[in-house]
Amino acid sequence: MDNPIPALIFGGFLIALGGFLLFNQKKLNDSLSKQDLPEQELKFLRRRSRRRMQVAGLILLIGIMIPTGDSLIPWGHALVTFAIYWLIVLGLAFWIILLALADIVATRTHTSVELTRLQIQQQSLEQAANQLRKAQAAARRDSPS
Image (cartoon, rainbow, N blue to C red):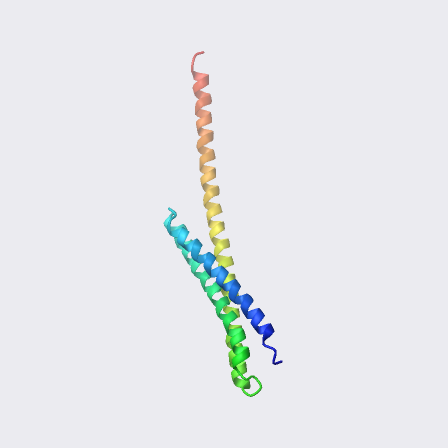
């Protein structure tokens, strides 16, 4: 029970994962500002980036909390502190899950709206192409050869 190695390994893994995710999201966020996108698309991507940066930061925070709490708090003598501390860690993990679910729902909704918009645009273009074909066919029939 007094072995800090598992907590250090798991915490180190979470710190590395959170740092990696935060770095990549920051890089994507920087490239996002350089792109010329419609306002609605830009708003969606910024909100998604904010959620993902929050997830990465919380993973990093949990990665720091696990080995720190395991090594600094005397769990055998402070059961209330033990319970409160781990409830906070579990609460942060639950918040990460909620953010991930929100990201999934938002991405699905956005994708569905965009696909519908593209299908409407495709139908409109197909109708225009059919009208053009009919007009060209009528012009060929009417023109003397």
